[in-house]
Image (cartoon, rainbow, N blue to C red; front, side, top):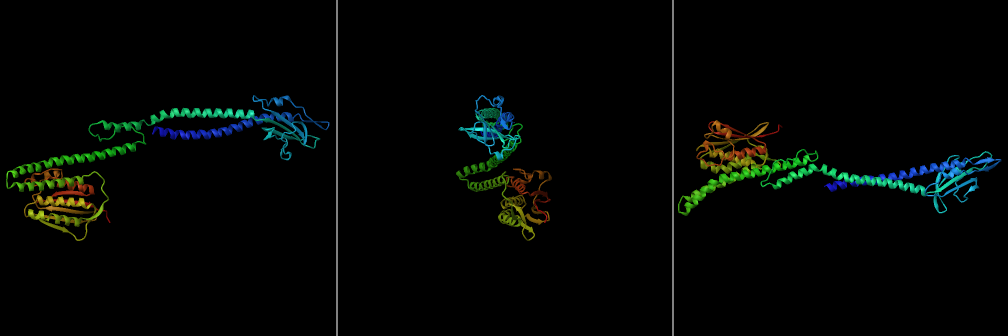
Length: 450
């Protein structure tokens, strides 16, 4: 990442340096041209000022200082030409003449040309003298060695400065990136440190203050750890519950198997009974694990609560006949549609009916009622059994809690725990009321007003 960031920063820096170099080279060429043109313009003016008319004749006195102004270390060649109209007065006759018509009067003009196989810069001016009909043309030219040498020296200095700047920036950026990425290194170290521990540590990371850019990453990782912790806690709880509750039925099975081997005629019946209790316990443990699963639920669907209640009654009718309990469904006609999941709703109603039958009296009655209001749809399961003391109502629904009224009846203490957990996942509310005699458990599904 550090190398990628360094490349990401240096590549634009190099691109900017190249653009600045091109712009600087263009500016340097313009400055060198202007500076040398100014010197040439001075020499041209000094020569042009000596052009006079004496007795109707154009005279010229070339000043040595004018040519001295053009001297330089590169020993550029200097050329000049003075002409009256098309007639050469003095100088180099083959020096490129200007177009007289396009040359402004008394205003120096500069241009490039080729002379004797070399590229030269020409400064020229047109003068009008009294008594002379033809214009006087004064030209001064020099080769470009000095200009080119100066321009390349300045460009080299510019490039050297840019290289130094990029080099220093490269040296400074790397430690700066190391300092900037230190919080990421701390986050990495905090995650890596978890690998050295014997037992998984799923608590939130302790990384100290983090930059704003890293906080979402740390929060997402902490959220993942929390979900893993919840999932593993549920797994540990399920394992502990299963090992705790299955110990007794398994012990009974071992004893009865030993008795069966000795020829005890009642052992097989006891084995079958213990196996049935073990099967029911495993089924309820799995139902509780599904109800408490920490993962996200699939999208809710419309479920007919009346249809679920009828299916559960049909499933539990044999249990009710065997226990001598009558089942009754009291609900208005028509569907009772709620947002939920049929599997969870079936588990809820099935556990409520199982408890109402199991803890009722012989000859008792269990009534399933459903009601619809503007704000909720409710289903209630009521029995006329012994009910519960007021002190035990707060403990109802706790995992593996067996109350005093449950003595002598089979059960695992998981039924209402499953109901509460599943209802919570569906957004429903559970209310338990002691009806004296009996108990009434109501499940309410909020409905949006129409």
